[in-house]
Image (cartoon, rainbow, N blue to C red; front, side):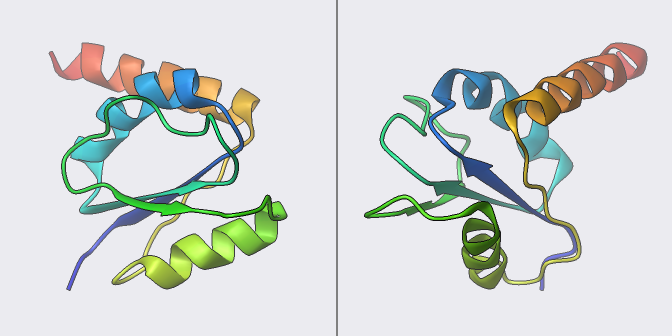
Length: 100
């Protein structure tokens, strides 16, 4: 059973995920990305990333519920608006720099 799962909902922010996902993936045991509409996924994803692609846009809460339901264990989940993604990326960069 997994210890830490992350769920990221993307509403067409592939470029932000291109930076975020490689930084987030090593920090979690399981990564689920919910693509809410076209243009939500970067060209490359970290290995083992599970992707759920909606056939029609859904509300944020629906997307979060879909992502959490797709995890093997949701000890932790993440859903973000673009501003929160920017803050998370900045924080992960700080942690990476301080650990060397």
